[in-house]
Amino acid sequence: MLIGIQERSAHRLVYRNKLRTFALGIEKLGDQAKLLVDKLPKPNKYDAAVIYGSYKEYRTAPHHRVKRAIAEDFIKHGKHYIQFETPVIGRSAKSIDHGYIRVGVDGFLWDTTKWGFDYIDESRAEKVFTDTGYDIDQQWKTKGDHVLVALQNPGDASLRGTDIMVWGLDTVIKLRRYTDRPIIVRPHPLPRKGQQRYYNEMNAMKNVTVVKNELPSNLRPLEKDFNDAWCVVTFASGSAVDAVLAGIPSIACDSGNMAWEVSSHLLSEVENPYRGSRKEWINKIVHCQFSVKELEDGTCWEHVRKTISTP
Image (cartoon, rainbow, N blue to C red; front, side, top):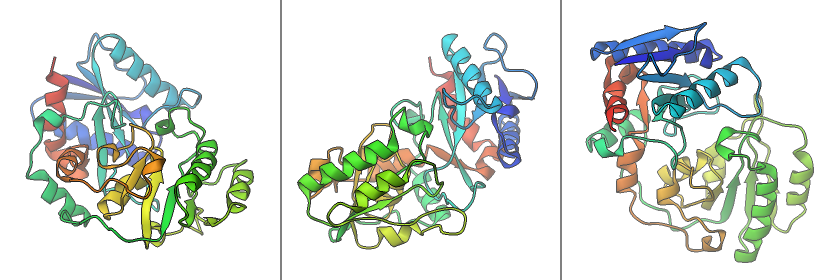
């Protein structure tokens, strides 16, 4: 196979370095990888392309235009592209340089991406959980006080056009119909203009608190809001995965949410959220991301190549 890796899709050096590392892993397994800067990989020449990060339709920055052009071209011609994204296990808001990378085929969301779930190695879960410091045997918590509503960065590609501030306010209003528990609203740490009026409306509601969470100097630890949480409500935020890994029930409101299979989906279920088996989901989620070492030694490519090769 010949794989075209477009470095311009990564707008930071730390991201480009991960693409270069992936190229090494491809070649270790006997395939070819070509790093491209000025040219876009074309589906008539390459078996697949690689991009770093999701693209947003309304963004005009070069790296967004490059990613969009590649993804659309390869899909149009019946070929695949491989997308790198922020990991879902072991990520940190304090850094952009994570030890793991989410790697999907033709996307990065749970419901629209080919993750290679037909090729699961059941021994992988223990390794990834140990490596990232999570307890694979974590049990669901059955006690807690407040409901946590975790917001996202406005305009994030995972929102698929949803206005997260409108969603957040609407979600808090609807939750009040189903629970008297305190509601804590956690803003995304990247501040954006126009948010304060929504926070003011939320704070004015009975027993609703919008906490302060802002980079770089006022980042609030997620664990602080998880402490004594009854459940966590998200749209497609990775905080849902964090919650499930911590044993806190989740209500995921979009099927692209990476914790969709182990979450409730209706706000009306807030007092009786999903607490079923996590085993199958764990075996799946650990195949959605790979360590930098696994990029280099070919482990990641070995898994992804199976999906690329499937008719």
